[in-house]
Length: 346
Image (tube, helix red, strand yellow):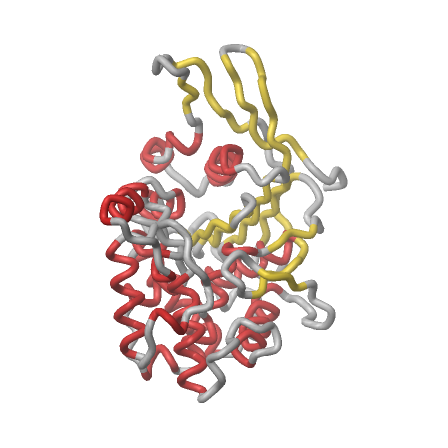
């Protein structure tokens, strides 16, 4: 994989190709062996929200999740980029109350909920969105629970040197096979740290998230935490994204327990394929659309899973709107589609 970027998707109007989205795909086993891909697997990528399940690992390994009796639904929302629907905001508020805090303790900031229905309702009521509506409020609540349990400062729990963030870095390094020295770090949209790493490292992290025993040597607490978080996300996909129209949720639902997945801002996407007959060690998949376009992401993700033989025909059909999105004009006429345009190299 010497070329840095490859064409992943094409936007077609009739027979005319109007646009192309370039990017990188990396498919690995838990030991880091690349089995397929396109482009430069060492492309440095900002992790953004794609590593939220990994950021939740210290919540479990610290025993904070046990102390505060986090249910699988609540663990799932801690791994989410949620819609800001009542099922999300009420769950986060309930968790904050259980650990003795309020919304004011969050440092994620407020933004309009991703759910258009909820956003319209807030507007009708003349209410501004709060921090509970932030898609990252569950992740931040998990960080706060860890800090409370460990007796740590809550005032700047998102600081990269805070012990909660250092525990996250250690968990990520363990799963991704990274050296934590000089790890490029920046500030995410929710004010928590984000990291610049080779895309291959993200793929390895998801391979090990899906199969903690695959590479050997992982400590039992981290391995058990990974299993618990993956199980929560698979069991409660509506908490990971939303009740409708969210790619993470729909992929988790359609794949029937075969995989765990998570989107990140600027069109980075990660999938962990659980061990199965075809891939007994499981797989980790990381995809980056170079221009940050979500338009090009869905077709690339689904087509990768199709070419790897992870999805069956019924599952592919259920995900058709993401695999080959239709292009309509202002009269509602079908005028084109967005298509995957690659063949994985093996």
